Image (cartoon, helix red, strand yellow):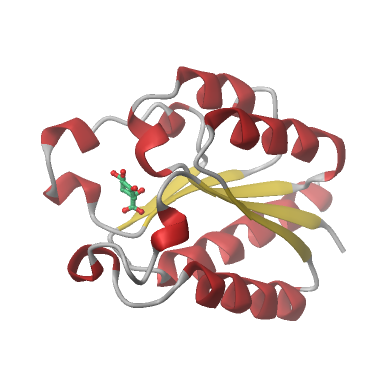
Amino acid sequence: MSLIYVLNGPNLNLLGKRQPHIYGHETLADVEADCRKLATELGHDIRFHQSNREYEIIDWIHEAREDGAGIVINPAAFTHTSLAILDALNTFEGPVIEIHISNVHKRESFRHHSFVSHRADGVICGLGTEGYQLGLRRVATLIKSAENK
Ligand code: DQA
């Protein structure tokens, strides 16, 4: 059993209430419950966190360096601004999947660039909160293939 970190950036605590026409009606608690259920099915454990503070996300990535096998991350607005989160992810050796609930490429041009994509092994966007499940499955696959090498 491996530990997978599922990290969420600013304003995602308001999921379900915030612009539901863009982000849907599911809350972050719903997403967490779905991720926990799937992680159990996949035989893994998860740490699920959200913060509005950049440094907390960086600290969790550092924590993942110690005991995490993979990271699923929706950095939210920090995606487009945070070189510090990219630098932190570059210190992590396991698989990293970047998630966006909305299709950022269909939205404002300032959402088209992602610092995190320079490190991510894969990016899922525009598939709603289902993207978390798919991201988790992909991280589990990558952990397994690394184990079998
Ligand atoms: C988001 C997209 C970002 O551009 C935005 O700042 C968010 C959420 C998404 O999940 O679609 O807060 O990461």
